[in-house]
Length: 220
Image 1 (cartoon, rainbow, N blue to C red):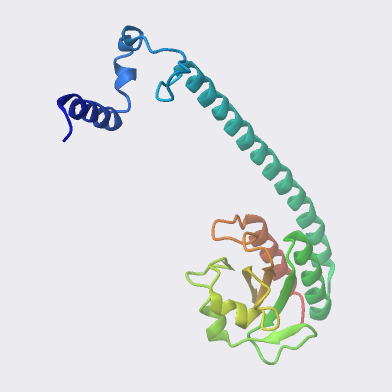
Image 2 (image 1 turned 90 degrees about the vertical axis):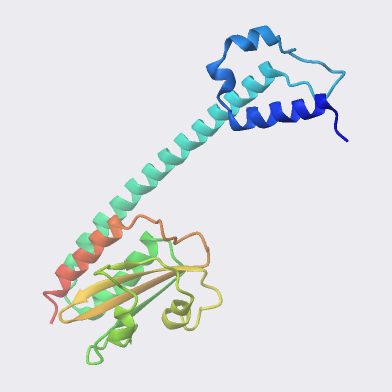
């Protein structure tokens, strides 16, 4: 059976856990309690100075890592902008659907760094090499609320959009390009499950979709 000292100690511990700002609000107690800086005779004594130093050091490391990630992301974003600008010029100069499909496959595969890319059209009368047919109702089911990109990672999409690679593709993105009264569906997949995620930024890709749509207006 626990004695009174043990009960009081547990009550104090529970109180401090629930009131983590206690020593901040009562900072004068820190000096009065006179915490030992270190005591090798017991592993229960907290070295506050070492703890503070370690915590500050870790915070600095975390901040440096965060800044590094931001800088790398910014550099990557800038490089992507340059690639998309070059791709924009090439797309606008293409005059046939066949050449446009080939260009889209090559450029988007490079820009997004994907392992597999397939193109679909919702009109069975539109035919071109590397362009497969897709039922319009099925296509529209993957793009709700007028969205032009899909990053939801629906498992059914693997079999539909990557029929020969469904076991190797781990993540994918779908793009919807308006083509007259129909749509082109561009499916890009990666063997890396973290390549395409639901929180991925799509602003540059959506810009490129608009450029493709502009070009398609001039293609007969």
